Image 1 (cartoon, rainbow, N blue to C red):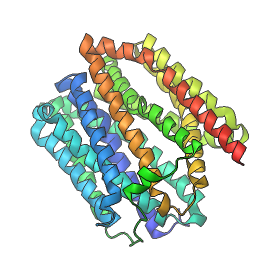
Image 2 (cartoon, rainbow, N blue to C red):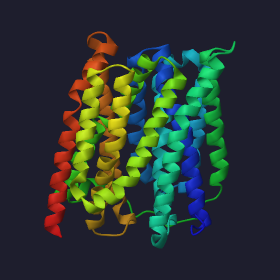
Image 3 (spheres, helix red, strand yellow):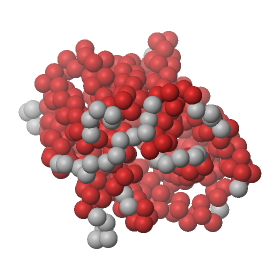
Image 4 (cartoon, rainbow, N blue to C red):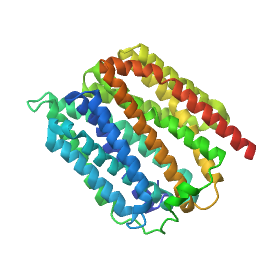
Length: 399
């Protein structure tokens, strides 16, 4: 890390703190709403959160013309702190306010990632990109792996005292709010940068190439299952293990396996570009196995199969996405509308996935219906892979 600039190191620290805060709390926000309400309450929260995140991510193009990206990042973290403090003070009454809480959470996420991604592009020196993103991946995976086990341990430890489990959740949410406040001070004053060459007319008027339409199609399919799958499996894991510490431990093991997979995906895809099909098969197989075996053994099969294979698929999706971006004309500032369009599509279909899940859960026992919902999902990674293969074939023809 010595070869990185102070600004690059600051970005890595900001990312590490944000990912740690998210991995500490995200799954337990889901379980908290489920425990004090039901799966439909959790789904409503996610509908509000992802609709809001999509809106505010889209609004970032306008906001960045009026405020600095550093200020936007701080605003998002203030909103994130308020979100967790509201959970802390509202306690079990939070379920009565899932929609406004979801909107606040979406505001925080949309503005944070819009501003962070912009600073990452500007401040990460092109000659050090390999080193920077190598460290960024290490920081992301480490923070993501640490959070669930620590969060689950905090809840379970407090739950064994006279304070009870609910206060264990509230203590965790309070600590995450503190981490967000600390991150605001870490941000300090980021270097100034040129404004974007951006207009919403760019999204409406630009000529979409066939490759770009395929990228948008990929993100539409991805949005239909990536986050909703994690939410449903997280709740079903909790129903099976019945303990926050065990749930956190399982998710930490999953993240640790994914770290290994991310590392060997690089040489594997370099030598065998079509190896992403391993990830496609693993994604579909892991869902099928867990759908049929709702047990601790089914959980371990799911996290091992998907943890070892899915990152290979995700890696390839990112490689192809950025390759298509590189083919577009203009500088990065002139391509912001493409980045925005892609994330808006992804956010819209994530919202649609939760709306569909919410409607589906109205027709009987929600846990049984959630299990049945898993039987439908394996077709989506396969559809995504076919779109990816078409994009690769088209890119190959162009070169």
